[in-house]
Length: 383
Image (cartoon, rainbow, N blue to C red; front, side, top):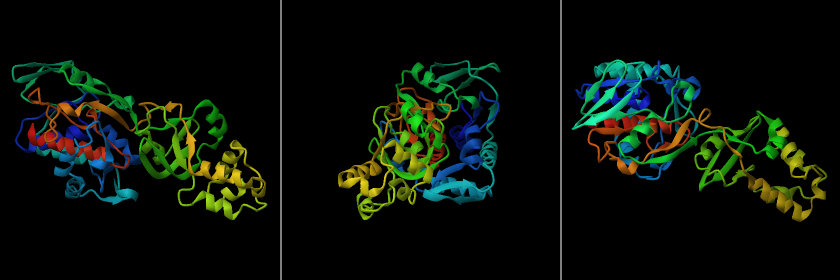
């Protein structure tokens, strides 16, 4: 098995506890680094509501089988067996009470129960297949096995060991790879927007944001480079690089009715908006739109346009901040080549792909870890 991240350790432990002889090879000096740094160091290890609707893929139904057979309740039960205390935040997000390291220790302990052997740090120099067996070349000697599981992750956060190894290996065995891109990633302002809003860095706004057929209600965070925060990270997975984002700045209010209530007021629009939006943001937004004036001067038509802009502020980012700032990689090994039940490559017996390297990408909030557990368990039960 290649890759000792979340999916790899789950798969190794599952297979080992079935009595399989498992060797886990990891090129990086530490295991589970994405687990360690996730959730502010407390690991958002799953989401209580995780289901197929929370995942993107060219084959949306692919994740259904694995999630149904090993879901959030199963992983929570494992966490509790190890005495790890946890809590639920908003929207079903489950976190460790203490440290993400508790989850890494748990997975290591589960691997020990399965008598999993390790080679780490140990790069893989190449993989070949002869007859029904694979040979994995490493500086510590070649390994031969009837099954090979690839759990090498995506391209996100190269500083902790991300590489395109899994995609290259898929290509070597004739599998298609859905083009990859950063997902759950901050977006950059175009130069003109940066000039107008860049000095609002640190301002957070509760919004509803839409793009690519998806809509999320979360906080938007203005940064010195563009937009971030949960709302932006969520919608970034759906952004095609061309379509503007549609941002509702007053998601709990009918902007037209609210403005009509103050249509004849001497109060300035930016002053009124500051009752519902952060003051700095309200002032800058109104100044940029040329409407920082008393309400009675804006007129009925003007207020109509303002209402439309507040309900649908259209922003076209110039791009993403790339894999270094992304939480996951969208795209990956084409699921049409894989069994949804076992993660096995149909045309290459004994070869499996699991976790982030596969074209299954979850929402922000623990969904990607759940895919790691579910896909890892599915392959571990079969390999």
